[in-house]
Image 1 (cartoon, rainbow, N blue to C red):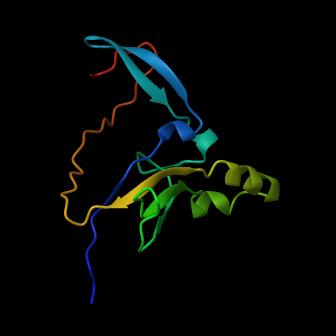
Image 2: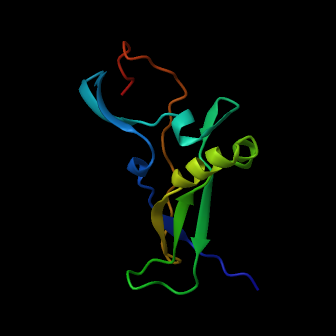
Length: 127
């Protein structure tokens, strides 16, 4: 018998290689985060950027009420192309990004907005 679980969590994007920056938006400055694709060993495929993750789920919650964690991994296609030294560096780029909590009775809203446009430093942001 299968039991459905509703899990939620968060990911600390600042654990990736990044730069915090301000850019010009329609209504003034917009604070954002720049995450370089190559420096984080992210996969660019079919006009999208993917970050492979590992999710560890435990039956029992820990002392903080967490039921697991999310960590970054390196996509298999990228991993296969790395030499031993590069694989060691890739392991350093695989931090635990956040925790997971079991909210079996809550509603998980996954709605969001994404931009498919590419901007340069000279462009105003669309928001």
